[in-house]
Length: 340
Image 1 (cartoon, helix red, strand yellow):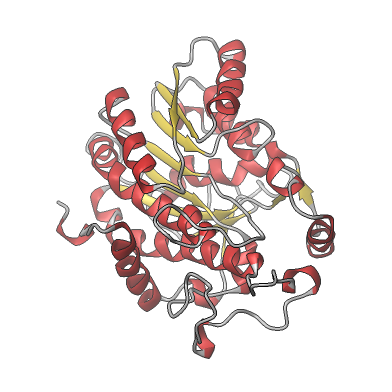
Image 2: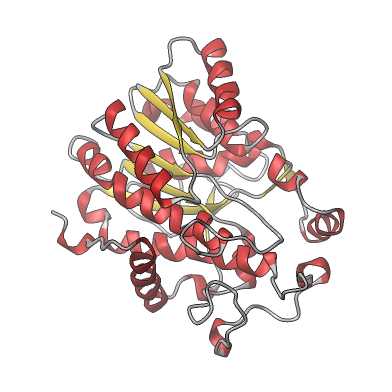
């Protein structure tokens, strides 16, 4: 249970940051996917308001993340803000970004894997991985593992569990498990346990002429975020790091505005409430800061409270399989069991 059961879907992230100001002050925090009018923007502003020691904003477009940095410098001039260019769709760019982070700090108290994309046409990363799986899962997988030495450094002096890895998922994870037999959505046969929910409602069933369904591939990547965190929870708490994953809610951001009218209309049919970006950042901040979560309690949060993902997103066997597949796709092994 969280320490503030009164927090919910209407709680603004700025309020959560004030409540947990002691968990922010002096800390080194990295937030990915920071650009104007998104929840990365409001999450960064909330952290910045409570005097972190160093706030690192990571995004792929310098001009957009610079707008957020400039706003923070204007509103909170005493907060140290640094920008790192990060394209989670490129493994080389991720490795370059981690090198830049290492020049800025020797520790990382909180990592927020906020960045994510939605595409409705077939695209691929430079490594040939389906774009959403590559950017939404493989990118954070590689980034988190490469930043782990900095997180472990912070965990040595923080209270056990106060060092956090927080990843964002979506309620859309309900629509598809990991398609291990066809993770690139190339039309290969998949067994029933790997197939997506059927029938998909309305525009969610739309495919391109070559058979690509962006909603199913997005859902797979969001399930991967949860299962990745499940694996981290198995190994990192003994080292003082508490990983959590969360659904921020349905939010009016640039990401939602960039969809087709037909797809946007479908989202309005299934979403009961559209949060503001400030409300959309609150669950991230609870997962990153609440001392009641130092001892791992639950896996997944929604509306600022512990909740339950669907069963296919809690499968420990799938977590092991996904970890091994991810290692193969980044051509590097990460043995958490060997960490001391």
